[in-house]
Length: 462
Image (cartoon, rainbow, N blue to C red):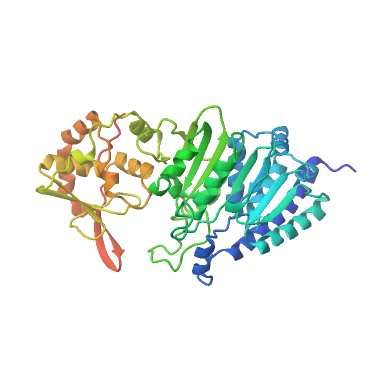
């Protein structure tokens, strides 16, 4: 009786799936996932374990960006590249790669030819992976003869110059460097920097990183190095509330949401004849929608021509991207502000689903002054509008509303005219502001903010 390829592939996937589950379980034990664990140990190691659904999403995105749509393409890619994981942990991403290759149609024999080097400073982690690979070899009846294990600090590793281009992939540690240590404030940036320097013109980089890579001034030079030569750059962005990519929370953190975890960007660099930069919005989702979020590819917008600042933006939609890339920045919000001014506007320094307006100045509240009432209501209209909310999600960090976020907002002539023309509508809303008051505990003290997001007219100009 002949066994079909479909049945065989199902059996192979079951065996790799078990290896993947073993890796996920082990990575949970390497990282901090509950209040019973050690937050100090997690911070020292920078460990955030990679859940299976994230590992699968990670490789699905790489295959899509690399246009590996068929068995022959995937097999050719594997034969022509060397894979290096800088901080392999228990190997969840490596085993997820093997699984994805089997889904693409590779047989165990083809799979066993993969040229890969798994790097970690933790010898016990490498021993665990070696054991897991050995069990997989016995079940599949193959030998991974081109698989190497390197117990070394990735930053100090030297990789032989081979004809094969390298694919660097992984989830590097997110941990602060000590003062006077390497170039960057966080270890993940050292790893990324080395990947970019060593990858060459034909190689690829595919990493899970903190979202600060997209906007932090600390990594401005690193972003420039990513764009120093023609490449295809793709980033998908993920918030940390209400659900998170990583399931390791921070229950001892002094934050109102004890499940708060790391916000992330998945960065992909691929060789290209010209520079192309793609970016998603900042994704927020509930746990019930997790399968939907990670079960399909997100929408990427082309931000190659974006020049508003030196970020990789997270455009909420095509409209706000079009506004920021098309405007000639001659007037900004700061041009409305006067010191001293009779009219005072107080804006909450943190936000979520709306930009909060306060009645009084206080800790974490920005104050803006205006000489004219029309400028006060124009400013109030702008900051509470859908346009500004999308702008803030595109260029902000998704939590803090900084003073520069507000002052730097570019005002087109049409928009400025609209703000002045309709300021009386906003005055009527302001006069009834108690109807839109919302309370939240800040350090145990009830604090009121006004939420006008559902009542101010849209500022999108068509």
